[in-house]
Image 1 (cartoon, rainbow, N blue to C red):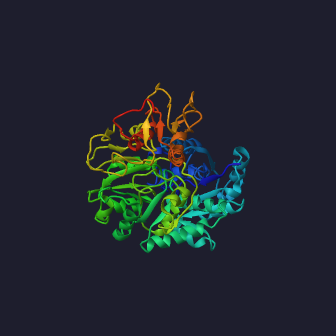
Image 2: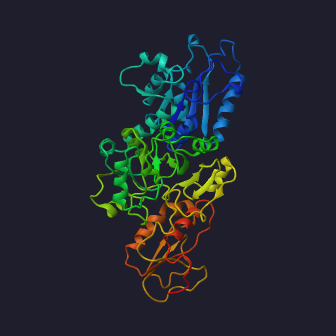
Image 3: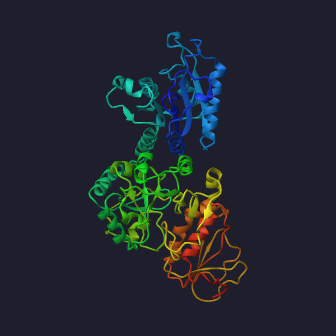
Length: 505
């Protein structure tokens, strides 16, 4: 059984402009796309709307269907799939069974699409939307956009209220996470947020790697991150936000093409480098006039940032230069009790750091390949220039020549080269190797050669090999396509004597 979110249309995902018959009159709220992208990770999406204008003679059915088709197609451009649009064309006085708050369409979706309504949500700007949900055991979230502010007094005490569609989406993800997680994690998020408010440092999960975070506006707290991580002060940090309002507070200018990328790929593994506002301390940006910003795609990270009430400056939660952590245990192995709190959100699903794109000079420039393939970015922003091999000083994290490295020497193994004949040698391979002779240990990143699976497994596999007291670890090159570019970037930065390849031991 699937979970779903049922979205009211007017006043919730688009502005309420009365009876709309022409797609040109449709105006989406600015946070609609990122909100639905966040929801789509865990939920099937439906639109359920009352269109009484048909019965009143103001609209015709083709008008309504044309507008719905436009909305669905517009959202599809951003990778958002609306499973179905349900609409009631009747007046309330008609006494039909399909007008909200009657649960006719919810029950139909449950039967037709195998939806578990008890694990589903309804988001809308009228009290009927909340009642609509509660009649079948779903959870209603009331938004204050559209007619929401006007009818708020009609809500029953205890109703979930959100400022807008983004706030509602984050609330739905958090509520769902709390239902599924029977541990003390929701309470721990509150305790971690309290530590951050008091200038402390907290480790937390994201979809890429675990981060070591502090209040981005507190220079002393950020200094503690550098101290704990043993990170040089000339290496800037990424600031993590929970919504667009926080992002806006960090930057002096948000170019249109950068904003469009954020709309398409936030929350997600994309970092944007933009001109910074005066609110951002210089220690966060290593004195640069730019700040790196991203919105993580993880319910624990978003809940933590919201609870703390401030954006978090956070590098990866490992000692500087060592392998990035993708589980809470990796963080504990590195830091022990030197971090006030470690939130355990499970293994990171992407497993490799974010892609970093700079817009400092009104040009889109790739500073670091990562979990979002460059081809996806160029589909939205057009051609992106690369500075991967040209800059001297780091403009973002992960640009130093040696980084992400195990303690055991890591070397590139030439394709077709002989297997090792001496010493304790490990192999890191994209797919199961045809010949394992001479290797003490082999780590396979993906049984099928899938690059996304390989990226998710990369750092954990390196850690396991590094723990075996080997003399050397060999790695085979992977195709530099999609996230393969990021995998090779990490391996080459972690490798020993990059100017040479290894043919035998």
